[in-house]
Amino acid sequence: IGVEHILFGYDHLLFVLGLILLVRPRQLLPTVTAFTLAHSITLAAAALGGITLPGPPVEITIAMSIALLGAEAIYRVRGRETLSQRKPWLIAFGFGLIHGFGFAGALSEIGLPKGAEVLALLLFNVGVEAGQVLFVGAVLLGVFLARRFARMPDAPVRFVAAYCIGIVGAYWAIERIVGVLTA
Image (cartoon, rainbow, N blue to C red; front, side):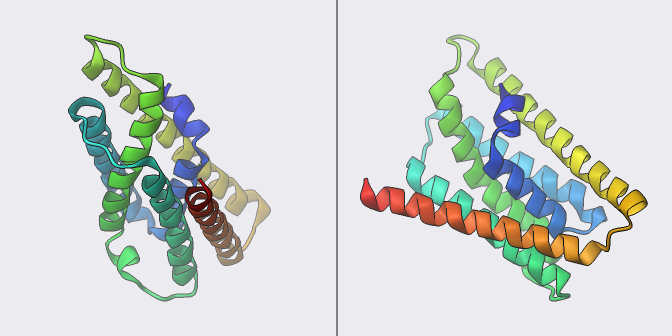
């Protein structure tokens, strides 16, 4: 269920793609690990400890985090250094905490089996991470193949991808805000 949630969780995938665009190769593992650790903490706190946040603000913040990563990736392509580039693990951890509450909302719809909550949560989280690793691997393989065979210039592709991430994140944020205001 965790793998399925990731592969069809487009907001999560766009956030991870934004991290890939933002960080340097040596920063990728600690950054993605910080994101994983953070969303695991809040997912467990919500699923096992009953700590929750209201869904609409969480979903709006997730969308805004995606838009922010798009903007930060654009700054990187343009050669401007920001805090997100110097300490991406910090940004990933902070937003990972919010994304964990988003996972908790999805998991609460499914429910955890009585008497096996910890194991079910662990397996869900392992599935989430497996899906995330598969996605990162697929993106890196695609980049490798594009560089090797298509001889595509790197900067314009990164620039377009960053703009697309930012636009989609902003659209989702506006859509979710309007949904709250009209509810």
